[in-house]
Structures are given as structure tokens and as C-alpha cells.
Image (cartoon, rainbow, N blue to C red; front, side, top):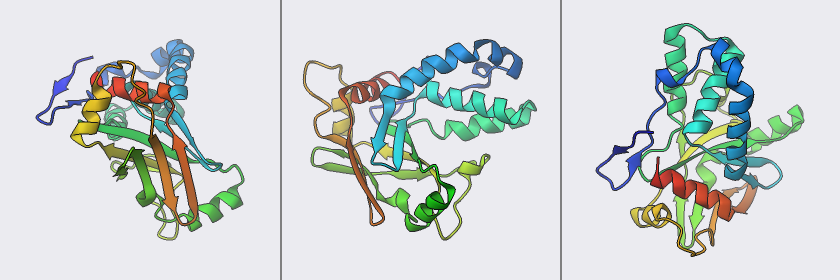
Length: 219
């Protein structure tokens, strides 16, 4: 994977390129193995936020999986349409000194889910990464809507899926970019939602923090 140096001390996570994306027939031959590997990665990147939400921190593998699965599900083959999906999902990749996550509302009952989404309007403005005394507000990513979950929510509710980024202060990014040296870097790191209709706080596991440190170190 080629790193691209920036002027801000961090590195840009290299965008997914067309040559990395398989056509539908070729993808079927490796899908089980690829999905299995990335699902394993996603387990250590998943954070449960109370009884109604969870988040997964994204990297190149998780984004590439989303692209391949979208192409497969929608049977997308036209070159322009394939490129549109690649460009759309590349928006999920974190920039320099950023972490990126997908926040999902997980309520099986449709009526209950719809009621919650109305009550939780503006939820994306109430999500935080907490590291000690520092609170980093989430930035909502809403570009390139090609799938239903990317579309803007109706005016009276929030969406069931949110794509969020956290820009880390430079000192915090350097702290987590440094190789582990025995210190408990996971201590005090959490995701938090403080919406009036839904509050949740989840400490990140040492495994999750280690994965994010690797993202910052080797994007």
C-alpha cells in the first residue's frame, strides 16, 4: 500500500483505485475468503453503543468490501457506474489525523425504528470521541449519495446509518500513531452519544485502539 505524505504530520489513507476492484465474476471466486477476513477485522473495530446503536471504524479493507458488495448486490457493471461507487465510498476513508466510522441504528422492529429515528433527529451532531479530557465532535459525511442509506434524511428524522469522521488534535494523533510501548493507550478512550433521545457511552477496547493506531501509523 502506497502512503501519501501530507503537510500536517499525518498521511492520507490511499483511495481505493479502479484496478483494486474486481468484476462480478472474479469477485465471486474470492468472496467467501475476502469477506471472512474483513469481517474478522471489523469485529475488532466494532463498538457497541447501548442497546440501539453500534459503530465500526473504517479502513481500506472495510471500504473495499463495501464497494464490492454494493456492486454485487446492485449488479453494477457499467464503467462509469462502478467509478461512481468507488468515488462515493472513498469518502469514508479517513484523512490525515482522522478516524472514520459508520454508526448504525440497530432496531429490528420497523415501527419502533421509525419512532426512534424521529425522536433522534440531529443525532449526528451529538456523537463524540472522548480521549481523557479531550472531546472531539464527529463530522457527518454526506457526499455522493448513491445508495438509500447515503441519502439525506427526511426533515423530521435522522437516518439509520451515519458516516462520521473525527479529526484528532495533532498531539493525540501522534500519541496513537506511536508504536505501543507497554502503556495502556486505551485508557479513557470512548465513543459517546449525548442526544436528548438517546445517550450511550462505550470505552474502546485495547484491541480497537491498537487497530486505529495502526491506521494512523500505516494508512
